[in-house]
Amino acid sequence: MQTSTLSYAHLYLSPHMDDAVLSCGGRIWQQVQAGERVLVVTVFAAPPAPGSPLSSFAQELHTRWDYPADAVTRRQKEDLAALALLGTETVHWPYTDCIYRRASDGGFLYASEEALWGDVHPVDKGLVAELGARLAALPLIQNSAVYAPLGVGQHVDHKIVRCAAKGSGHALAHYEDFPYAEQAALTKGQYRPELILLSEEALEAKIAAIACYRSQLSTFWTNAAEMAAAVRAFAERAGSGRLAERYWK
Image (cartoon, rainbow, N blue to C red; front, side, top):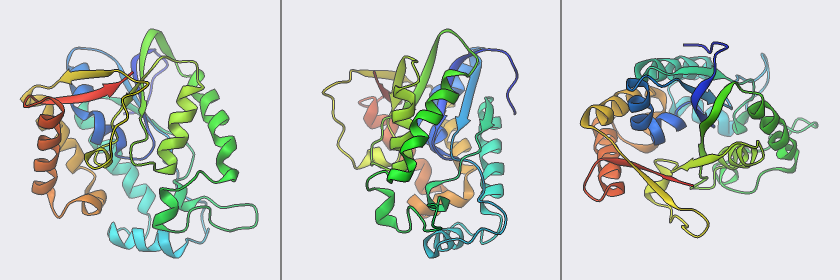
């Protein structure tokens, strides 16, 4: 579902095509069921320019995803299917995933697994201000809730989106970047937690939506059943036995 010109009560910033659903799918479903207008912005959603070469690392990922050609187009379809299942509106912004981005000399900015979790490349510094300006221009109602990644796991694209959201002027709630948040330690210092309890129906909708991202499941799990078990276990841990998602403000 594409966006209309009306204003939204909730805006979720998803660095990639799966992040908002992985981390916030239960809350999103409950908000939609309550009749609230939800917009998910997938930031790094554009394919590389036609004919552009891929790094060997990007080629390896395409093979892992079982999408050796048209990987981004197919991932866009997965994203739209998942978000349609949750009932949200969505927009794909015209920025490429970090694995495709290149410097002016043609070199790839992030050409290895290790680079994904390292420092943001100096070439990308300007993205923060550009994304922040786009965020500030989105049609939101007064006191809209804006949700951005906490940056757990330190993925460069998550860090860029988090910084852009911080500079956009909106009040923010940060979501735990699942599944990275399963392993990473959360720093409570400057944030206070907000626990959102989920119904069984909400969790099941979240799991079904995550399953739409067929290409990405093998990155984290061996099959859909293992994914479902991991999502449920994380929700139970967040809620100390109850189903929940945890946010930080």
